[in-house]
Length: 296
Length: 296
Image 1 (cartoon, each protein chain N blue to C red):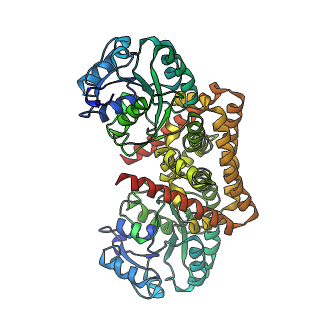
Image 2: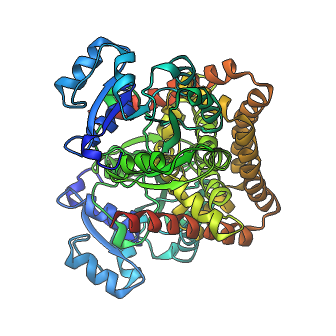
């Protein structure tokens, strides 16, 4: 595992995240193989240099990879870990890109009897689109990637996963599965609920005339605030179902700020409103600066 | 007023909206004059062809314009209408770019004794930035512009305002001030409260370690959902203060959708969650299509 030039990485699933990872690894230190359900996409992946090679047999791919990345929907990651546990090469490392980590880490227990090491992964990257046709090689550039070592992951296994992600321009941080799930409930999952509720509250008008008027009244503020409401309903159902308790906590944290604004507006206390809004602006502007510093 | 090539438009205030309007009108049918408080910005506007000419005296500008656009903060629009009512050329038309229209229309009553016609205007365009340094000539391209005729605005006055906005690539619609204010409370004002509450609930962490972790956990979803939280606190205080009742109604409309999501998540009813999310996606995607159709 120390000489990545000889390391074979298998990407299982070639949707937005899997295909973009293949593209990002192009010309790098890893030999790329992989598999996806549709034969036409497997052919496309090799023809378009998304992968160096692609097998028709999932078992064959899993049996020869040093590092397997399960780039699948959350329930599929858990299912593959259980159903194909015996197919991974003993001593190899398995990781994933799932948006929640606690359930995945539990499912990965199935690998232990086979001497296969699991290290959870979650790149904070994506768009509202999905499928291989939405993939692009710079999706991961400057992204943060969370790496969740299992209780007994060997250090080399964790480092291999980190090396893969750093090689595509990301910054990795180690975190426990529980802390990760609470974190992304706040920074990602709750945003999708808000964006969708917002889109519905504006555009789901009782009559066509009002709906057209609302269409006219929406501009770039709406476009950006609601962008992720155009994400996959199935994928977000699965993520929020998987991380339900943490999402409900993150919703309550949002509620406190939102209700504070409501009280200020009702009371006509616009000095407090302005101060609070300035505080939010300061924090967001600091975050933008943090992100741009990383880019240097 | 029928031959716009001879028409003098005065832009009062050269912030993001005023300066961008001057840039957008460049090479067009209107002769551009204007005024802004800072002398250095007046000079910049002429040097950089934002305006054809710029007077040092506000009164002089108002006295010779056929159409004056008050591109000022909301309280300033109302103040200028009252304090300078006697300065506008009798028979000329005055309009504005304010985000709320009811208060402005009331303030514009002050123009009547002087035979000056007021037609409210609100271009649905902007960014989270402000000031002349943020201006750009394509800000208004494809934007919707709401035009609010006063009770006794002559048809030619309304058409002059519409002609100005159409000449910079926007689509105009007439609407009453009350209906406008209710509309933008939903499509714009409430979004700023949500974006700010969201930024605060994520980034205002009790300790530095958690704040840095939250910084890492925020990606493009957060960037876009919260973009308008970086807007001017003073400007948004003024807008929401001006449109308080309609904003509180729009918040309650949002609440209904948000609380419905919470109930589904609490009850574990993820089939309903997925159906509702798909409905929001469908509506937002229709809006995107409406916006792209307009661009053709």
